[in-house]
Length: 253
Image 1: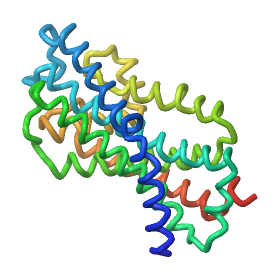
Image 2: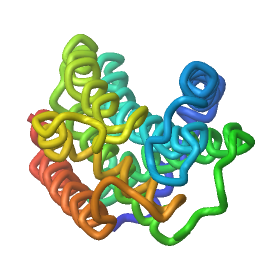
Image 3: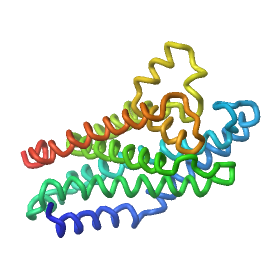
Image 4: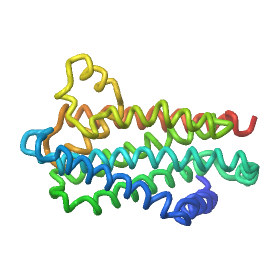
């Protein structure tokens, strides 16, 4: 690891999204708050998604994790595609920055943005009744693994995409459906058996359910299974993304 190169590139990536914090941090928090207000007022008094958990509180962890994953993905993918289209990617690839430094600078910044958005949402919506976490260690582990998974996917998408249309297709036809159909607004146990099986094939479901378990101590599936699936996907996706950086796939060729 070239720590000087890593620190410089990581700092550059942090500055990139923090300079426009109203768009990169404020907007996702506001969107989640609007979801919370609308769903809490519309059906909050009529639904109990999990035993003993008010619907107003049930929504908060799901909204936080959904926004964390979307923003961790967006940070890495948008940074690379912008650098490619503006032609400054060559100035990042020319210096003697190691593959590990390149990978962790981009992915690390994506994780930081995802966690910052998640923390902002939890703080702004906590007054809806979010309890003290049942297992804070579990909350942190799932959040880190989830952001690593999606930031690595974002890095891979940014390397693959050659124009914004391709990146938008991944976000609209893969990321968005996976996050919205993962149990953010409902318990998957309330679905018919077929759709329960479909939901259990969605890796983002385990992110949402595991994160929610960390707060309430109850979940739709085994928390050990959730953490195991999330960790496995994080490992596989980060390995694939690092391998793409290491081989220079579509970066140096």
